[in-house]
Amino acid sequence: MLRFAILLLFVGSDPLTDALNTIDEKTLQTHEAYLASDELEGRAAGFPGNEKAVEYLVKEVKSYGLAPAGVDGFTQEFKFGKERKAKNVVAELEGSDPKLKTEYVVIGGHLDHVGRKGQDVRGQSPGGPEGDEIWNGADDNGSGTSAILSIARAFAQGKVRPKRSLLFCFWNAEEAGLLGSLYWTKFPTRPLHKVVYCLNVDMIGRNPQRPMDLEGVKNAEGDDLERILSAALDGEEVKYTKFPHYNEAMFRSDGVNFLWQGIPASMLFTSWHADYHRSGDHADKIAYPNLAKIARASFRILNDVANLEKGLRLNLETPLQGRPLGLRGETLEGAALADLKLGDGNGAAKIAWVDAAGVLGQAGIQVGDVVTGFGGRPLPVYRPLETIWVRVQRTAGEQPAEVEVLRGGEKKALQATWPKKQ
Ligand SMILES: [Zn+2]
Image (cartoon, helix red, strand yellow):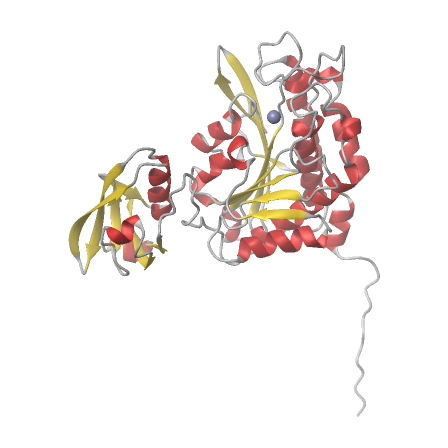
């Protein structure tokens, strides 16, 4: 008997290519043409031009079919300074995996800039084109804002649907001190302990001849993050320089607020230029072909992180304030945690590796110890080790701390002292 092999040939392209093709120069130019126009008066938080930018972003993400993920629809309002108000804009794409869709991958960038002459806004450097009194902020951060819009549309209207949910975040009042992202991490509109990663894009529209800064490739445990970042950027032929944890930009932009919560974050940044915070930061100076490549790479990064079997978690060796933790371990959950009878809301972690020369190693922490408290306070159920890491980074001077552990069922209090920060 003859057996036929039937070969079905699908003509057409794959969903990923289709989605990436919609992230094009023309779309980015259209967004920049409005966001960096004089009509928006430099988008300073608390001023009408900024409110117009917010309205534009809401209209866009709504038209893509994304779900609102703010407090009042897509927006989250907060107060700052002297009676000023500004709004973050947050949109969501629900993940495709019934279990993993309760976790989130964030892409964020700030929508505000430093406004126009006469507005009481800091950051308006002099020396722009003569007579130009509007700081349009096409690169800072119309570039990141336009990129996020194009990425959001590509996901919402295409056929690529990652397992985890995605949050498209447009932060406000970044120029006033990273305030919008700080506010969101304090009053998150989705559970913060379910956020596995934040990709921050701020100033990605200039210097196409120079390798872009890629900061934070090693801010997550293991190799997944670095592999994903490199593959995505290589795939779009973006030139870049890798920095393991941070370089110049991370501390000056919104991603750092996620690190401060123990969430791995990276940053894309095409570096400084003569128009930085000057009124000449105009839309016609944006390198659109390169911006489109970076935006497409960002799409790939989000998709790949959101599809990982195991969510990213912070690399505790990230020396945010020069203080790697020298510790690795697993968060205790379910019965293993309940058995410890620590009380409601209290968590613990089991230590799997200790740097013997590190502060905690010197304090006597051993592999197998279960850590239950740090600095006189219990640890939370979620991210207990990350919580220690955050508390350690926040200490500036010499800092003695008591570390509570269970060893063979017995309670021990170890003393650890971090040296004064150099
Ligand atoms: Zn800026």
